[in-house]
Amino acid sequence: MLLCIQFVLVIGQAQESSPVAQKKYTKEIEKLSAKKVMQTAFSIIDAIDGQTTEDLIALTEIEAPPFKEGARATAFKTLLKQTELDTVWIDAIGNVIGLRKGADGDRVVVLDAHLDTVFPEGTDVTVKQKGDTLYAPGIGDDTRGLAMLVAISKAMNIAALQTKADIWFVGSVGEEGLGDLRGVKHLFRENAPKIASWIAIDGGAIGRVNNAGLGSTRYKAVFKGKGGHSWGAFGLANPHHALGYAITHFTKEAKKYIDEGPKTSFNIGRIGGGTSVNSIPFESWMEVDMRSVDAERLLEMDRIFKESMHAALEEYNASGVDDEISLELIKIGDRPSGELPETTPLVQRAIAATLFFDEQPRLTRGSTNGNIPISLGIPAVTLGRGGNGGGAHSLGEWWINENGTKAIKLALLIAMAEAGLGK
Image 1 (cartoon, rainbow, N blue to C red):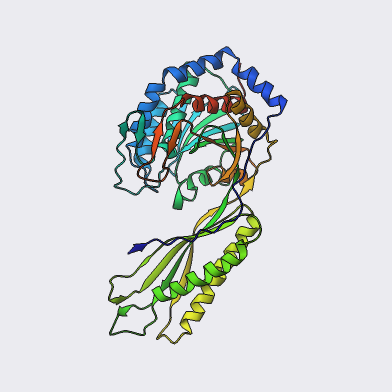
Image 2: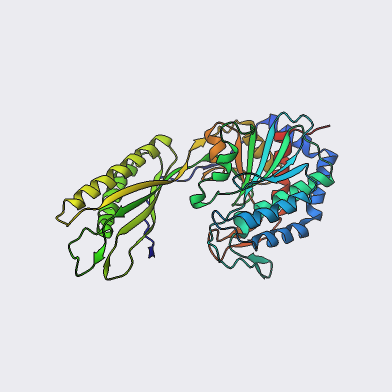
């Protein structure tokens, strides 16, 4: 049995501002973009746009449900190998990594898009076209990002673009939902090769410069009992009833806390358990998501949640039921928060490059692969995939190639500015 119940209570507005590029970075971007080799690369991106769309369709039609990204990873690896990178491999966690060596090789700059989608195995991911619009689950979030990475690698190869730093083209696993950023966490594990900068491409329009990570903590709360017949065992402790107590306790206490202070939210996204309408269940569970722009407030929400669960359990078990219910709290998600100053060189380069393409940059906060490097103080931004799209995380997701190459050129320009143009 799966049911869905939602309590979303938030205050304030999402961070979004109109930043200004410092003259130093404006000049840097203008000088770099004027290089003949960069102009050649831009022209190549336009010339291969049809193939980029074909790559997008081919990748979209390969299922990549949570924890089962393998088939898409293999196809993405093949596409990257065709761009003549120095080497392409799939790491221990399932990330696809393509290396383009730099002239110096003393730093690593990552261009990333995630392989996984939110859709379960068996979802129809066939791309359907109506006029100029492509429809398919996951076509924008984030398969378009993968196709953009392939296009950038092709353009760099054909134009013979040389960088000072190494470039890693990464198709990461586990960005969505219960994946809990496992792909990027693996890349920043202890003793892993050091990454200097992280540039992710994800959902959203061109102009998005996500420089702040929205932290979240997620739990599965499982209430357990003996179970029995609804009539013959009536009066026996019921896990569903205990869950109801827990929902009431938590939502009441959490609401009190979030009514003031920096933006914080909580959500009970899924509940389940039980075997039949005439059976006392032996198990009842719910999955809870808590988010905050402030790390300390997220810790306080964690405390409120745990105390509410135990208080509800104690109250229910003392209500006169036969036997008692037990509780297990399982942490299923932990995304750290953080924020990079607007003055961070990578952020400034993203702002300047966006303005160079006559688009308005917007500094935003989100829950993306960038959360991990940002929380570690490592320069990271998440860019929009451009074009025109909508319906993310729905079966009706769509995307239109409205000047879509501009977002590809923008990502390339930012990466080149960060990695440095080689001789």
